[in-house]
Structures are given as C-alpha cells and as structure tokens.
Length: 162
Image 1 (cartoon, rainbow, N blue to C red):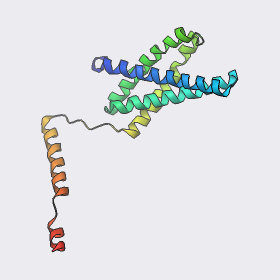
Image 2: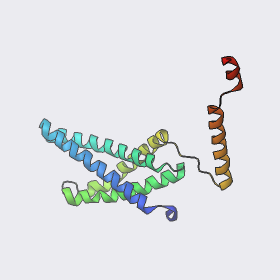
Image 3: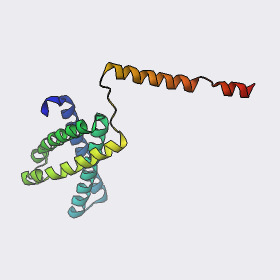
Image 4: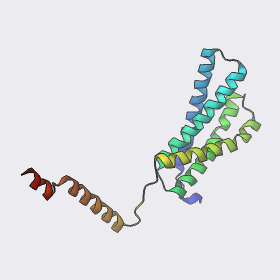
C-alpha cells in the first residue's frame, strides 16, 4: 500500500491542511478579540471554525489530487495521518492543547477527511486514466472528430441559407 504513495504530495497536502486550520484558528481568535467574547463563546467559535477549516482543507486536497476513487482515498488517509501528526506542533506551540486532546482529535480528523474527500469526489470526479497508448490515441481521435464535426458547417445548414 505504501509503495505507490507520492510522499512529496502527502507532506505538501498535510502542510496545506495544517496551515488552513492554523489560519482558521487565528481568524477565530481575531474575531473573538474584536467582539470581546467570553471564554465559553471563544471555545465554541474556535471549535466551529476549526471544523470548517478541516472540511475545506480536505475538500481542497481531494480536489487537487484528482486521482481515482481508491487512490484518492488512500492519499487522503495518509494525508490525514500526517496532518494529525503535524498538529502535534500545536501541543508544543500553544501549550493550551493537551496531549490527551491531541490524541482524542484523531477521530475528528478522520471524520472530516472522509467528509471532505466525499465532497471532493462530487466537485472534481476522478479522471478516467487511459491504460495504454492505443486508448489515448483513440480518445484523442474521438475528441478531434467531435471538434471537427462541431466546427464544420453541415450540408443542411448551407442549403437553408441559400
């Protein structure tokens, strides 16, 4: 399973997820300061924004991949694990996130990975990948034929105009 994984893409996408969630948290923090929210409201706002950020991040990562169903799912699972590991930085950086909270967040990351991955399949369905040069040549000839038939005037339209 792990030999077909493109590790550069995994870490790029995991960093994307992590950065989007960090930016979401910072946005929530700035809104809380601007509105002078109490701690309980700040916690709810931060939680909601973080969930939306995870959903948007995994949808974006899934759309960028545009791989087949199984490949996209495998990629998103590995990205989710890597992003969850990157979130360990938040435990060290912000110190208000405990190690127990980080460990418990794994299921939340998984839920939003599957949800965002599902949305990405709706937004950007997987491309059909040609398995051989013959199939690629046939597809390009079909596309060329469609373009030619659409652009060439038909005989019936020429007769109607004269």
